[in-house]
Image (cartoon, rainbow, N blue to C red):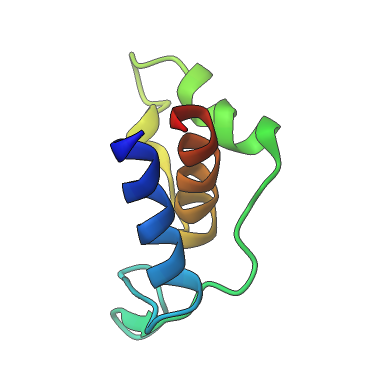
Length: 80
């Protein structure tokens, strides 16, 4: 339950309270508010189902903040 609450706190921070630092933003990174997190389960759980071997990446292959915040929404619901 505590992990789920922590996930929702990160989502609240990213979407409503000041935003999060996005290292992938143009120009070397910037703090921005995530206005449309990814909620599509095929995209979110596709990161987990990738092969951890070779060049596919795995969970570390998340490449945008919308997917990261959306994953925390899913994880928050699963934990609570």
